[in-house]
Image (cartoon, rainbow, N blue to C red; front, side):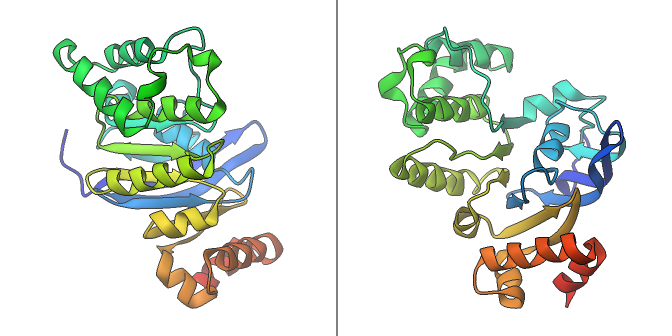
Length: 257
């Protein structure tokens, strides 16, 4: 792999489902070590972008590179380098947590001599040691979410793509996951989608806002707040409403103003 300036590169990405345009000419990049929040209303295209980046869905057009690889043509290389936590975590509910993670570690190419160590680390980091021998289907939604996060981390990937990582967690669990994401961002690239705007303010120095399938803002959290409102919620409401009412070009002008 040729070393790239960006670990995630998206240029003029478009995704259509029949006549429906889910993602429309989206471009952005994420550098090594960045923790970036990805915000947008429901149906704006966030999850579609994440599924394309993680090789679960092909793009209709445009260029995408993840860790220097094309997710469509080089999907295995991308999957080896990305830890992906989808919003609805697909788990084998009949398996015990530890055996599920051993299974996933083997599929992800973790060497046999390292699996026990890696699984011990993610069990501890995700706070699920106490349920390691329980059947996944018997766990609460919050614990299942943390098993999914452990799965995303088990092969120690350089890139994490997290879609609503704190959904279903209680306040204490949310705090622990947020602290963990901040810690992970010190040596990984993180792209984080969430509808909890305060969460992005706490975790993400940079924000992407997508509305109506197009990017309307890409800037640091502090710059956006200084220009458009005291909180990220004010920024989000202003830019997405502008995009809905007068178009994406006007919203982008608002950002640059």
